Length: 269
Image (cartoon, rainbow, N blue to C red; front, side, top):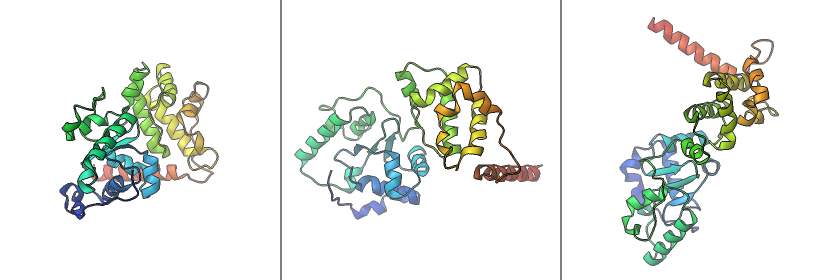
């Protein structure tokens, strides 16, 4: 890592960069110039850090990594690591022997990420001196790899349903819960109790309507609380009050969406 990076001006004529949305351009420039960038382009950087330093909302960063907007960026959500495929193309230089030594050192420190398989596809000259990691990644950025987490813990039941519920919670409550076993165990337990994904979403809707943006209660919009066995059925049946109080932002947004859908239905009918 260094405090100074030379970036070639041809960056702005690159067809992939030109096709990238505004936030994507800033994100790409940040990823090749931030203080963590190294020789290989494979390094650890949490989405929270990216959002804090670029002022790009964390959800926007997550979408840019997931929707294919960044053609040469690959993100490992499980290990919070990135691979900038053409990082050295835009800030070349350095003693070749030192660069090679640096890359080997970076590999030894971060072998936990399968992004190294992609690095070897781009840099085959390192195949003889770097062992590949066992789990190859797909082309492009990946969705949250919850099946990997669950398989490692030998808990593969309801994996797709758990991911759907956790993704819904993150979207509705503006959270970023990772698909760890700690965040998944109570959701899976309620599904084993014969509750449905719709029941889980109803609990989320009910509690988001009453707790979101509440200074003290917002922190309880978390899996360990919402899907606790002793509280779950009560939360499922606790319909938020619709009158007599101040309308929450969530309720207002929901009403706006329902109004738009109703208007579209009338026009189509």
